[in-house]
Length: 174
Image (cartoon, rainbow, N blue to C red; front, side, top):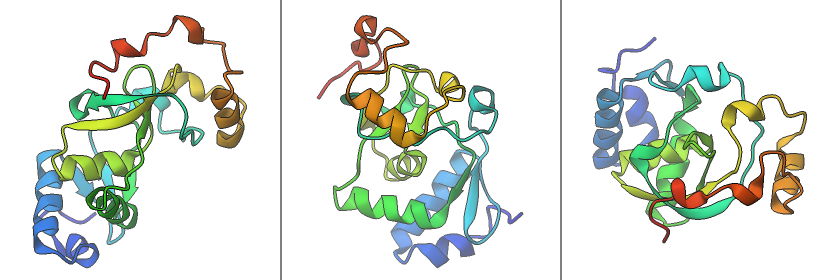
């Protein structure tokens, strides 16, 4: 494992010195760990939610709104510099897609975007909230594509979509 004081992996991916400093500062502040020249770890992610298992990739469905980034919680440990760089560029170009989160604020899709948004010190971010719990998604026998279709057409109602109040999580809708 590389020490966080070794800024070389960050320099290899980010040409602009200002971005390098922001990434480096973020990693130190939030106890992230560089594991090699291509990858890093979020050492404060919430392991208990998914026990390290990957969730189906659900995106572009859910209640659209704005949340304070402090209300979101990470459930993915390993990330790559390549994807982080891509998401920082998308944010700077204003082409960043909303993060997908569960009803408790756990990130289902968008961990690299989450890191990029925090690095760039964004406070309010666009999200799509699903009427699901991240931990429950582990037990579903559907691919991300199948789950996306069901959620998009409101065929997935096992958690009582009609009684879900997104405003309880989305305190400020844009």
